[in-house]
Image (cartoon, rainbow, N blue to C red):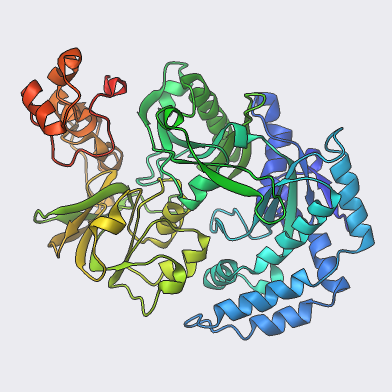
Length: 560
């Protein structure tokens, strides 16, 4: 029996064919996990039946198929034209009166407020699967109020099944265009514009280390994290300690959070805008320790329910101070990796550091830097090129598979650029802040993600080695083999080597690599004068690494 609407309280993970991966997961959590304390905003799904009937009512199936068969699947040279034609066909169609009425009835039942604000999210039937995330491929519309605006957003979501990046992604993943439908999720809006939001992984996203949860957050709406428009706060939580009920936060790293995305007054043209974050809020963590632990517990509950590592989105309502989980999908990079096989990259020489940032992956790549302001600037890219740009949005996706590496000024480990780079196996360094000013167009550079969580861009071509190690052929001795670390950033990656323990670390290594401030500068903190860093070194009689970046010299938060 065809059903156009499925409310979250009647939706579960078994409903992927009708409501898509995103909506099925929201319904599953709403029904199964709210009793365990996980907050999920209520909503409903407009099913794939509605999408197929929309195509049939407007006689669109054959015209769409005709357009898509003209796609150049070798070079994708005509992708822009194909995508635009397909989307225009959808936008030119009309929602039937029956479908419109059912959507309006479900919307009116969400709240006592006649025109309550909702998030309208695309949820394709081939989306958020373990083998294909479709991250950022389809559109979401926030702060939609009123029946007319809702119906318009639903049709725009239908059209977003044919964004350029979604068409290319389906083709590369082997999905047939005519077999993929789009469901639309309509969900009570969380006022994160007045609070904060972010994403999280129940696995360390670079190494695949399974005993930590990584949360990241920004002020306002979370789209700034997805777009990589700002450098977010990051929090690492150790699962074994979390489960014991002890204090589990092992690292907090403050991002600049220079922009805050809020709702605009002009909802039709620009429903959201970015404003500059006040300096005091830039220097404040978006989450308290208690909130970090709450979200980590929820993430752990979600992972145990799905029995696999998960990628989640969270939001905090600034009006009620309540936290919510607004999305959860399987992590798509590490679930299928052979953990016994490791390709180890190692730099064989030193060079001049041009920039540093968050490393994505563990590879090293030598190539020619190509400074680009937008995807339209790209011409004749190859695996010998490394893209240097301010930030990367989903519109860049068709280019990323063509190049050997990616470097951005903005973005964290959970940004769209980082997620897609991991999926493609392309080394990337995000959140470099000044990469576009310190790296010259067409100069040869070495991109290194092989030195822990910090990625380095070096001037010129540096020699490096690449070695494949098969751990399945290694026999452990009867005596315990434990590792002593020189750099704490390598701990997660080294945990995959055969060992009986990782983590014995000398205090000076922690100070050199993590604290990056001489202890005497903290002991004599009140005696230091507000002057240049060089003078501070002389006053404290200390030496610190020339690569010091991203930390305030005075920051008492760096104390253990």
